[in-house]
Image 1 (cartoon, rainbow, N blue to C red):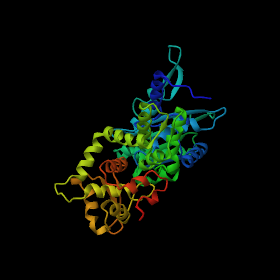
Image 2: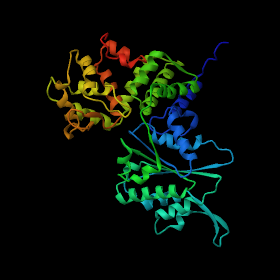
Image 3: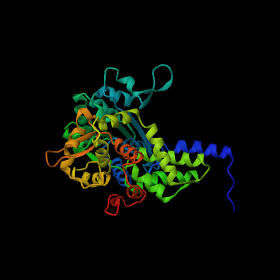
Image 4: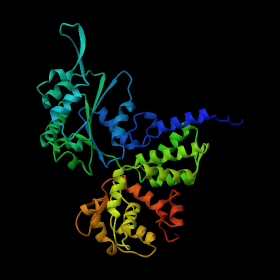
Amino acid sequence: MAKKKMSEEDWRALRFEATSLFTPSTPVTTADLFAGRQAQILKLLDVVGERGRHAIIYGEPGVGKTSIAQILRLLVPVKTSTVRYIRKQVFSSDTFSGIWTDIFREIHFRADIGEGPREYPVSDLYTAGVTPADVVRELSRFSENDIPIVVVDEYNLIQDPDTSRLMAETIKALSDEGINATVFVVGISDNVRDLVSGHESIIRCSEEILMPRMDQEEIRDIIEGRLRRLGMSIQGDGKWKAINLTKGLPAFAHGLGKGAVLSAIRNRRLEITEGDVDHAIDEVLNSSQNSLKADYQLATHSNQEKARYRQILMACALAQSDEVGYFTPKQVEEPLSAILKKETTVEAFNNNLKEFTEEKRGRVLHRQGTARIYRYRFRNPAMQPYVIMKGIRDGFLDDGARIALSRPEQSDLFSSGH
């Protein structure tokens, strides 16, 4: 049966749907659009099911911590129970009392104070402030048929040390009392102890859940799952180029996917080509935050003609890294040798890596460890795919390496065959 010819109105409708499915700027909030993270989801559901257990979700910026915290309420298997979900986004000026006052505004009680039975926010009862004992008391009032989930997001922004201490005491008390409510602490950090400011009591009663960068299959699910809903497809080379350029960050999967889809739609095609992905790279670079552009310029600018800051930074972006983005100087040697087309050892660029951690180059890299065992990663994870795409557009990769970007086997990107 021949396919129905699409009208201009059909193409406009498809474009509108595409822009609503690919959302690089906002967390995913719909269960059927959430891709991957099955291991983390199972751990979180186990925490919800175990009375007195809580969780700390941590990792790099941009890996989907907020998305998984928001989507969890839609994944809890319920029959007769009701999920009571409350999310509080923390600001740097927040105090313990302020955080829980905002949470209490989302919890209501019914009373008749002379105006007939009405619902009032619990926060009305605590005009003088909220203490840990108040939190334990109010969260204990939920019925056995309720599944209360409280998410304290952006926890790393807390500046007040008393707030961190009181939050740890509160979660420990909730655990000790076996209260039927689960608190999820979500924040940016390499490790849990840094996130909770050393308050060990919160760690002992909480599951530690690292959100690593997404693997290839998870990124592929983001792109292909949305394309199926649109009735579109993508050629293999274009698909793998988009997947590999994201470096495991879902926002770039959305950005490249959206740009490629819109390019194909402009050309009135339902199949996305590698050329559409190349066009998406330009779109992402042109629309990237001004801060990324400015930070890149600061990190790589030099008045010396022979300076190699751009090439070294791109080699850092292409280096093999661990699940939270750290790489060693040794891992920079191979990609930099390929970019410069000559064998290059750590000694030739070690001082440049140090410069990238300093203010004069915008501290584009973060360094961890001690001399001889230093590890580096991009301070802003979004800079890593940005640097790679910028390097592609600037012609730093030879034809062999560019072709390898369009293949699943990224370990071959800088093999001797290139």
